[in-house]
Length: 208
Length: 150
Image 1 (cartoon, each protein chain N blue to C red):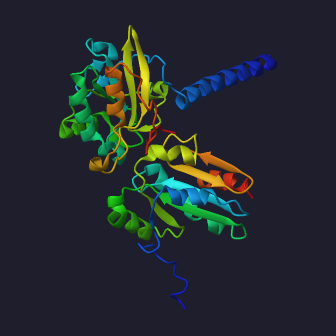
Image 2 (image 1 turned 90 degrees about the vertical axis):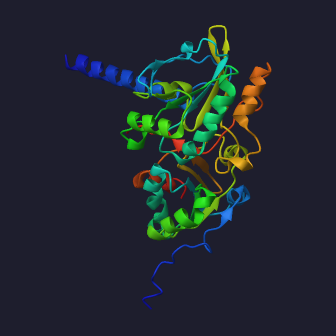
Image 3 (image 1 turned 120 degrees about the vertical axis):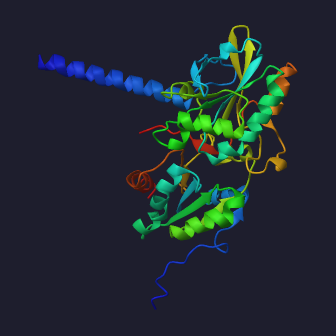
């Protein structure tokens, strides 16, 4: 009997490790260029649930993981509004997602998201990744972190992953607008170049 | 003599504003010294939590050849009003440099292809071994990790 219990415990331990490992793999890899992104349903600051499929006329999406507290994310808020204004009418709306656990930083709570969006005049959905299930699927590691998707039939194909532009601190000194370049390329029927970029950012806050 | 014991506070003469070539030169050092390069910023919560562990590291291993360099990714406009006061308030004595190289896409991969760009991030190396860590360290974890280089 003791042996049975012991092996049951061992089995459970293995199962638990497998779950932990799968989660970690998703978190560290996420989507690559060319992958089809799964749709999601997340709560917007107006209380309504939002999915990619809701945007019937969209040709794609500028999905950006961002948040309230991070200075790098804050530096890009106005630029996100400008991107949305420029590209929503061309079929590529901005969809912002806050991936942080407010238990780690209260600045990133749902209520604070509502306040911040109002203050900054966000023209795009600002969604709360409640339970932190979506950011690991994308493989977002920091804020801000952009994923540009393009519709291909029923699929949303990942076409660009990375930074918004090449100067977080001084917008007037920006030389390359990575996201604009990528969306312009997609609209012109081309592949973005570069398809991936890296930037400094705040880690996504997960409670330990 | 009481003055001699006082640790020197950091100011604009000891904290340079540097480009990525500064980091690259550090990375090219291949000698008996173990280098610990920590990328941090005053605005990064997990960074300032672990910063004292890095700053105290050298004192924990007085007989080892160890160099700790703290590379700040603070905004350049915050150099005088945020970074320097922070270093003084917290009596940080390790060498600090502010890295001002806004197009991070050009240099993040050169530090390590494994680096996504999130901070804190740490590079530890000597002539025998080199590893990159995109994580926050507890004091114990940092000691255990650094000891594998001695």
